[in-house]
Length: 502
Picture 1 (tube, helix red, strand yellow):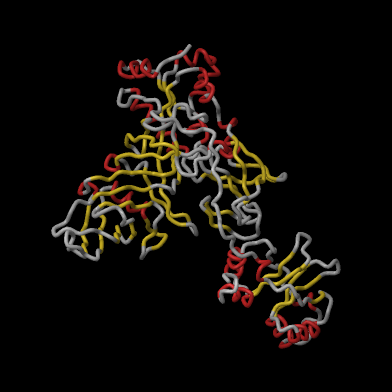
Picture 2 (cartoon, rainbow, N blue to C red):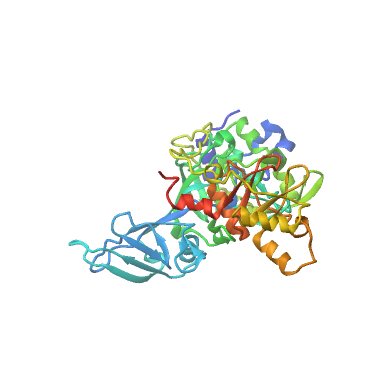
């Protein structure tokens, strides 16, 4: 059996279409079988509601009197792009306020406009013969704009990796706050309701397909940026009329230590044309897996801890190395369910008809990393290879003598097995000398928690470790924690002095 898009649209017009959500579909297939579900169901609706940073809107303000060609533009102190002729702009969701920084950004401007609040427009120009005005400041409502067109370069991720943190330090990421020592797991995405998860071959989702976007009827433009369905990470570029949207499905947010983002409600209706569609939409949360990634590794290629299903993640607990770790979602499944439900209602009452893609989206494409024509400096390029160290059982006086003789302020402390066990600074020795009798050996005064680096670590990462821990030196260690170098502020001066650039 096969159904055409015209047959399904005719049933929608007649009010006879059977529309179900992707959450309902697995049970229907279990009850009726694949053939029965194909005969019974005409449309499956999907939905997701989560942080979609790559979002924004094109705005047209109309011409002022006298006219101005706006070159720099701010909306509530959030800078928008000024390179779109005279009175057009694009405001990105993650752009932060010049005054409030991460407390307010482009996402908040969009939510304020959709919520009916006024927004201050401020713009400057150098002035020209045809656009003589140089500055303008005015208050605007959404209704005052000629066009307000949401255009989101990357939305509706096919799936998100889950995140944890194996380091002993709290991390603030776009996956939320990650507790140290694998203290929690965060995840995002709607699983069974996710649009692309229900059409992984992208047969039904493509250019021109109608969608639910923030409470309004929108459309798929095509593949989104970073589109990588060959690796399970397809994305969509979408558009819709901001004036028709609802703050219920468009919400600004700030992630601590990361910045501003926009929560977007998005749903795609899928016509049930054949058994392949039935099978794709019959998958449950237990059938959709993601990698649990260690965000404690400051690299693009973070290692996976294990694979988990959305069913496990939504259960609230996931096992790692024999221990139960609590999970929490950054997206709202409840609101994703409402998106799919409202889309179901629209179609059920004939308010939206379906369309197949006018141009298909590549379902095999894989994204590649940035091409870097020049590699940034690594620790090995600037570190001191001559290391002055001290044994943990040596006297404090010996450490003091080495600090003076070695012209250094930091002594790595080496254990009996030749591995790093601590670090002693000039300050530690000074305290011991000022309080005689309380400590005798280096092991009595050393700091046992040592922040280290490796030879192949990027200098940017090493500098961040120095800043975050308020220290001025890092022992450079190999895989067995043998000290093979030191990185200090003096070494970093090689970069600032331009030696690396020559």
